[in-house]
Length: 48
Image 1 (cartoon, rainbow, N blue to C red):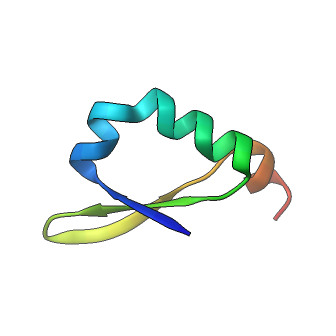
Image 2 (image 1 turned 90 degrees about the horizontal axis):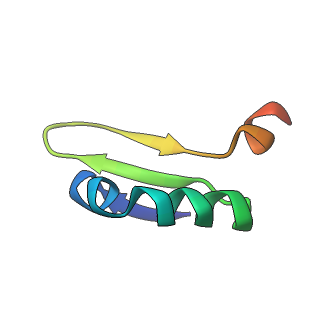
Image 3 (image 1 turned 135 degrees about the vertical axis):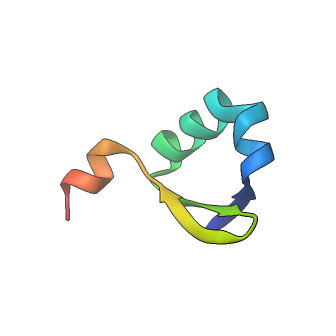
């Protein structure tokens, strides 16, 4: 699973969202002084 930081998400959100949807691979988003979160496509989330 790929990992990006909050700054990278802010700068590249459309490209990262496209990658998540096309590759069907969630991405971990790290945050300073806080817990990381996961970005995944709705299609992949719905399969859970």
